[in-house]
Image: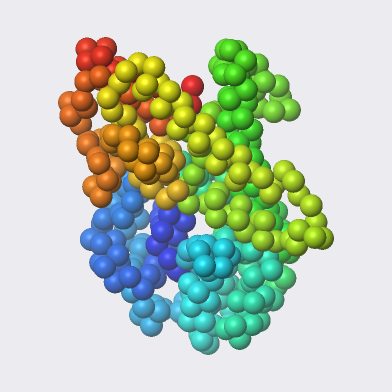
Length: 399
């Protein structure tokens, strides 16, 4: 098929490169001309394990093209358009910002090709899509929805090995075209209405942080009780009804999706009409755990008479360079405001605007090193060796 991808962020690039690997012709559209030039020269704007190999593969690359406007594409030959633009939170209104989505639908709706299947991959609240279509004068019944479930750090694997494929829509012909595109996948295809397709995405991104928050609260309870944390979590996770996936403690959870989507879920309903005490308190639980982590660091520093704190790992989790809503940066800010000397150590992700180092040799002796998430084995071993020789203490918030 001939596929157009609007937006070249994590979702857009992983999706487009994945389809190119499967033999489809893929055109990327992004109004950021510098980003398009960067991509056209075989450069990726972010790190995602495995993506570079598929992107720079010559056969795949020949099936891809890059455009900084909508006019340069062969729309008459296009089968499916995937809209993968960002839908960030508007900090002033604490609601989703739909301007990028509205812009994309406006441009595509001008086309004469009525056979194109316009598919929204961007995460958009069910109640907002009608407003978007009304604003741009587009018939919402013609839209299809295909929410993404890609995890940063394993997005390439997730694209080729989905747990399920969700397709929402009301137009049977356009739904059938999407079913054909995904027909080779070894996954159940769920066909549903637009609202349900979006709610599937949002509730998945509600349950997962709720699960992570539960583990972090369990961690605090285990520490308070002087229990063996690893034994406790293993014993609970081995229950088939619970499982051990997404069952690891952390300094707190972050990233580009969970915080944003939880805000939107809590915007779905009116509190005087619906009471959801679990969902409405997930963010509060996460905030509380972040404070607890900060107190743990301060206590360890003081009890061991250490001079500095190093936060090892700048991103919000391993195998990504994404700094959005990173607990590391939140903890750094809190400690800095308390006049505690704190630096970030990361050999790959640069945060030059903060007190940052990239090499272990630059760590000061007599310091506390908080390993924010699992590191590469060689780097971790080098850290342990350095600390044993330089009177440093290592702390693992996730262990």
